[in-house]
Length: 446
Image 1 (cartoon, rainbow, N blue to C red):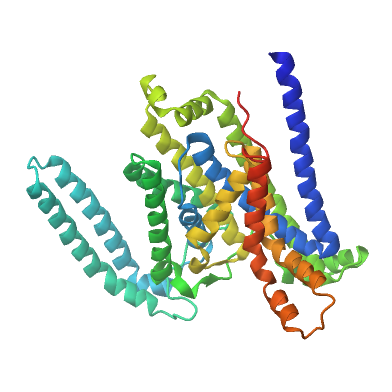
Image 2 (image 1 turned 90 degrees about the vertical axis):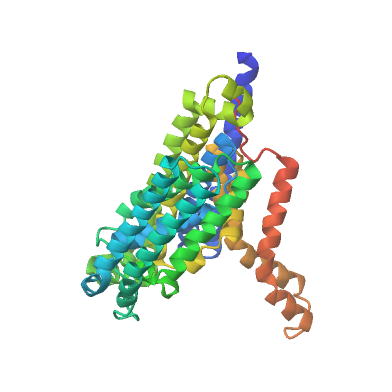
């Protein structure tokens, strides 16, 4: 048994190294053909995508939970970036801060009162439902009476630049942990409600929750400025302007043969890449340790046969809740990192169906149930998602090189090159599923 398993493991390890080596060569190729600034921009987004794919792989690969609300949890991470890093706005707090806090406390009290009425009421049937509904309705009305005037007063404070309460004024790097906590807290609530459902109903529930979260972030201006966005978030790395003013950095840029602007942009992106790589390695190490532990073996047993695991005394729903919270926390961390990289929070950019599809493709192509596969899938899919357009332009230009510049067909094909992105994603997915149905780095059966 050992003699037959060892060569297989060695061959798989060599194949994994080869795949990551090819991915590295692709990124280097972009650096030589386009620019190294483009390469490190790609690398930073690949790192964040890999972390998101790891979070989804924890849910789907470990436990078989079909979560279609990935972008909602990523948006909560972005919200953490605003609430942690933005400085508080004293005028907004003076105008309506007390009303907002009072309204939120009233809302929480309403939820607790509704639960208490439901649990302690001995009546059955419609009377119990009517009494609980009346409690919630009265509490909600009181909450709106308190919070609505406060919200109007806050949003009227310099709406062009402020119009919201601001945040805690702390370094934005702390928002990465806070984003994970926000996502985990919401995932716990969602899981308590929906994890007893069938997988298809769970998908619908998570998609609906994701839409509700993003809808809330779009239209609650007092919290996030809504569609007016929050720009100018702080950074954990130097600013290009500060580097450009430094005499030492100017000498450094001259010594490596680059102009100051390109060199400063490259240094900032490399700094981000170092931070993101550290976070990815920590999460990957923790994920691998969990997967190889007795807990990981139990989760895979529940995934493969819930009935048998339940018969062995395992609390399936509780374990599903646990892994759902952990995976969502990882996605929340990645969402906070994405907002940090962008330097702004734009709620309209979180499109649940479009980008959730991308994260799922990353996990499927990389190899469901394998953490290294999820990382490779995150790199590969984001690379082709970005580079599909320039590759499409090159292909269209080569195909129509014999036509005059103003020919209608050439112009049409060149204008349509951007649409090759979706075609490329479909082609990559089709090829991988045809020749490697379990993904590029399939799950290892231990």
